[in-house]
Length: 458
Ligand SMILES: [Fe+2]
Ligand SMILES: [Fe+2]
Image 1 (cartoon, helix red, strand yellow):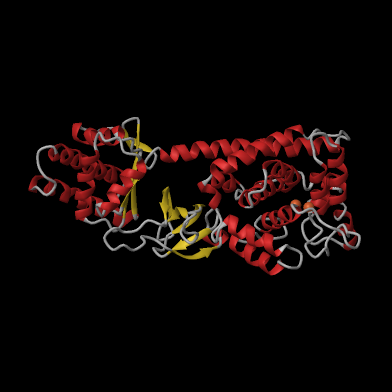
Image 2 (tube, rainbow, N blue to C red):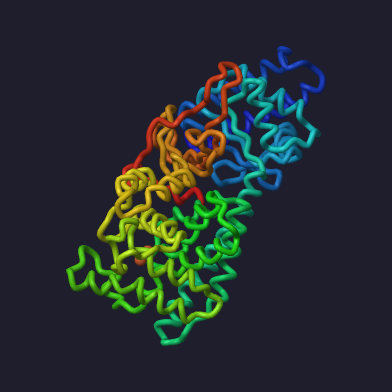
């Protein structure tokens, strides 16, 4: 089937949908006139689904869009269909393989019944599910709302990035940087995390960067603040912690750059040099305005280790700042899940497993537990295979059931990349059987799946 043929079939489908909607004003859904019109479009739709797995249609400016190209030659029937969807605020439809003729009839009937009721996207999807329509996904602007949070989160992330870059630049130029901007951006991060934690955390999964230290610093701040949120740490302490996390590696400005960027293992002397960065960081933060002494102490202690076996070596009986372990576990988690020249990234799950082994030794066991609780069993950004064979990336947690997060399906059951990634809530049940529609089978390594989880949040 070539593109032209496909388009012709889509136009015919839209036409019969429109004609059926018109007839539904006069006849019930199971009237032969409607059944006949929809039976033809069901055959056409089935042939497309068989070939492509899914059929995604977008609606933009009252025009049907297929694979990025608008389909213009619509007659009044097709237009009625498109207009109805536009009026209801529907921006796209995805038909999935497995769709039955009965479902299609119910789908059109449901669209007819909800006309003019001003339902939200979730309400439309719920109504469809209640009526037994599970193979059609409705795309609505609710995602746009989510996107607004995401773009705000991105803006804050970018600001935090420039704060780290500027602070480190000032230090390299021999200036004493101000902590004012760091304090402000940590405030913004903290309120964004309260508003939409998942949007902020999703950004820490974008791991394809050129300059490791800057993104790493922001990620550690986001993760540390999320942990602090889980622990209900008071706001002022939280800000001091966030500042420490954001600036935890600024001491690396005092270590030769080629050493920091060196691929492969370090020699003993080189490692001794790197080990100076927490003390250097402490010295720098202690001289900065708008920075509390506790932040400087946390920076000094971020590699000290729960069992105090790390660096710098503390004097006997040394007592660490209670907030330091938060930065240590966040630092460890972000480093493990990031691709470095000398290390392939671990999946979030592998990282948490490894950290569980480190708990009680270099990492505080209680804090590792809080990290796991904060990020969930399937942290945002985890790639998973569903029992349908589809591959998805975890996009948000479901507080009621951590084994059933919200996901974005990226690959179909044949391993083919979807044109429109599908947002899906794994707590969704088939109303007929009462069983979950899709379930996580296993986690997968993005490197083996030829797909990039960050695509869904980019
Ligand atoms: Fe460090
Ligand atoms: Fe670090």
